[in-house]
Image 1 (tube, helix red, strand yellow):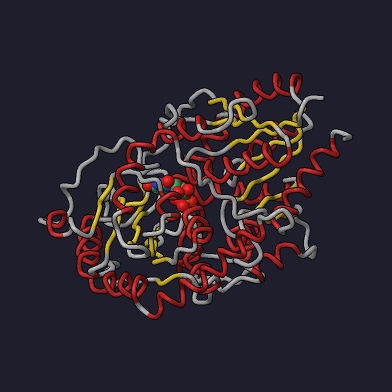
Image 2: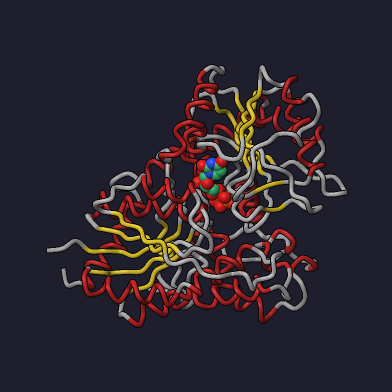
Length: 471
Ligand code: UDP
């Protein structure tokens, strides 16, 4: 009989795609499923996206790029949460067409979406297919999503003005200004669209969470309690895509060869995710701070943002390589100890490399999990989205990260950067954080082992899906 089939709808961008790819791989190898990725697009898929799909076994994982939707009417300064939700919403007619064919030809057991894809539930329901969320962030942020409708009703004014931190069950209290970035301006469309998705979370048949108990014990315990109506939650993490992308081969060779030549446990990897960037002044301070630290570094650097604040380029697309914005003489002065790359590096392989001793990261959840599974302690430098909440989890809950402080004008000075980097790579504090993340690395391996809790949680979901077919 034909294998059970799952349709996965990732919202555009790699932060969502990478863990879903690993999830698909597990469905295929451990549970004998087949999978189709249905990918909404607004522009033709990036090379990065293409090469990820090409790295998957074509006989069991298919992908269909839904026809590009027109987003020209959206204001250019729309937040990326707006782009993601609208891209999914405008792809629904195309999704419906694909479903029509798919349900007649395949044993489709579930549609899986990420946090911005809940509008697609309607299509799943029309075809009597179960609808699940694969939640690509922390238990803390999932708890925020589940409580968002209530917070929206009970808190007036902006979160950033709250004098008391926001308290979510089992979570470290969160200062209002550190809350998920699109919530910071209630008049912005991104707020309304995130709230819209959050309200629809309760319609899911289940939520798979890319985290595990040892990372956030009390937040996960609170989510698993059956004290309020919510879909069943399955902590299945950490699912990270450690496979090199096909197109990474060349840049991988250069930077991994450079890492091979560095002493074991000596290099700080610096990267701010698939879209993170800084103001020109901040880039300057980072460069000088790295230099001042005297430590070895591998830095994936992006052209500075042309606004005052740190932020994100929309998926860092179409950027021309150039380092002309770095301080004069920086590259020459640091060439013996540093390597600078643009705009992309094989992050998972770098974190797995024996020369890598620390990771300065924007705290995207995939990056954080990649640090955990490789036992690499962190300098937490959150920029946007839910990253400030992740930084709280990394520093206060998991205790694997240092967080440099910004000065009054919002800039983190070179001295502060140098201090954090030195302390992480060769200080006592760094040693403590390294020991702690080693423990979590072991816990990660255990929870994903055949008898581990995350393996069992995924098995539970899969069993439910198979039972729907009467197997
Ligand atoms: N990534 C990478 N090379 C880069 C930048 C990012 O391989 O130069 C990968 C990284 O390993 C992670 C994903 O892209 O799997 C980024 O996801 P994350 O959730 O950390 O942050 P986002 O980019 O979504 O903000």
